[in-house]
Length: 153
Image (cartoon, rainbow, N blue to C red):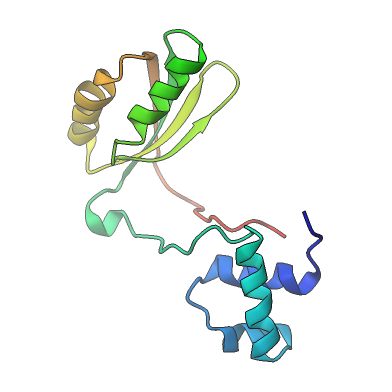
């Protein structure tokens, strides 16, 4: 892994805050001309530092204002059960993030739902069909105070 200089880090921060920022705008902010900024961004993409560009969607405006963190404990631990669980979870649209974690639970899911009835339906009819799940524990978000995918460089 190559060492990033301060300009590379500044470019990553700018893109992390606004993926639609233009090369020209970035160049002005890092005091370079557009051509070297373009080459740096191209190198950062090729090096895997930039995975993809996304838009952060306002879930509330789309009537998906209920955010739930769902802890999952598997029935048992082995490679095929964990793999099957992840494969099943990847098919569930309500799940936007899935992490394999340590501690009392095996996985942490971030789930968006329209309301409690929608989440109840999700738990009973979708999560309930995932046979590798032993137990779940849900935590409901009362207020989202910070939501960023940017990394402090």
